[in-house]
Amino acid sequence: MIVAQLLEQAARRYADKIAIECGDTAFSYAQMWHRGLCLAATLRRNGIDAGDRVGVLCANTIPAVDAILSLAILSAVRVPLYARDSLKGHLHMLKGTGCKAVLLDDTFIALPSFHDACASSGILVVPLGLELGQEQPLAQIAHGGWDDLHAIRHTGGTTGYPMPVAYSNRQWIDAAKDWFSELPRVEVADPFLHACPVSHGSGYCFLPVWLRGGINVLMPDFDVDLTLAALLQRRNAMTFLVPTMLAALVERARELGHVTRSAKCIQVASAPVTPRTLLAACEIFGPIVHQLYGQTEALPVSILKPSDIENAKPEDAALSSVGWPLPYAVIEIRDLEHSERRLGRNEVGEVALACGAMMSGFYGAAGTNSRQRISQEFVLTGDIGLMNEHGMLTLVDRKSQMIISGGFNIFPAEIETVLLSHPDILEVAVFGVPDSKWGERPKAVCQIRKGSTVKEEDLIHLCVEELGSYRKPVAINMQYDQLTRTAVGKIDRVALRSPHWEGHQKFVHAV
Image (cartoon, rainbow, N blue to C red):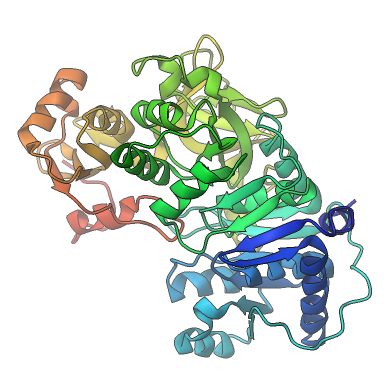
């Protein structure tokens, strides 16, 4: 079977059930499948066929689902773009994957510079809307193979240009099966709230929900009150969130005095979560919070389940981990200098992953960068971590973000963990800045709770007490606003760090 056949099979089985909701608009499975067939016919008339790469720049709208269905029907390769990215970023993804066309919804149609740039690059722009044309639906789906490409997703790009990772039909289906292998089962009519973009992590959940007759509920923008209300009011609601979203929901629920037990599952992934947020979320929403770990190159691989969270204390090691390996994934810790050497329990090294939905290399011209990321059929993640004596994975930091100060290795995540233990710190980023004596020193930027009176010297003293003086930040900037984000919603460390390194040729300062 391929993805399109599975989609069609479910559309027939649940034909009269609600498949998609977006605001006040809802379509059944039969209606959505018909829309997909009609758009597929339009795209074919415009020269799009099996194997062609097609970019998709849509918010969480009905046309975004039309794009998912129609490209699967044609056996074309979907290349999701990220709404918050720049024109330069969009073109990098489109050109790097050799896209023949790009599909835009109403949110992005009125972008003349984007149209001009695509035209000059020979990329066809196809506008999508809620109303489809009068095209006759395609008579049948294109029958591809297990190993034909289904989608190309780009990495998060927090330390440089995003890299393209290709998924075959087999890998996309493996990701769907593995993702939900340890999560509560999706039942018919269960609502799945896409508060995150379907172009990003939440999009991996679309197929499993569709195949079981659930309702994919599209939320065009993350609104704290609307998302909280949906989790409070919709029975058996499920969702995928990044940690900043979960923290915002927890804060708002506390302000309003809300506690609910109606939702079925909250997934949180894409970045570390503080023990404080995990415990508070379980207190408010019940034992339904699951933390997942993986990356675009290999996912999903580990899970921290509600049973690991609800009765834990903030200082328990489990809450600082990303949980246990999933049943169909293998996690190893490799030596930082010799990537083929496997380390033992409680030894710190680079996290290496193997699973069904792991890349065999980056796509296209970027494939030349794959060699340093694959070792003995494992993906080297660039994450630094350890497996404890029980077999749980704890992440220490990103390899590329390590600060070398006076010959000592300092992992920013260690400092971030300490700062986040302060009740007035909502999020934090630590990075190295040049220092004439030590080479570089850590600096922190924090988002603090509104009304907080916490002082910089108090936070530095906290770091000294917990970590020792050589790992204390040289300075801590505090602000009420959220920290700068990348196109996929992660803290943009490059943007925060770069101003401190102006005049330097690289992010390393010699003493």
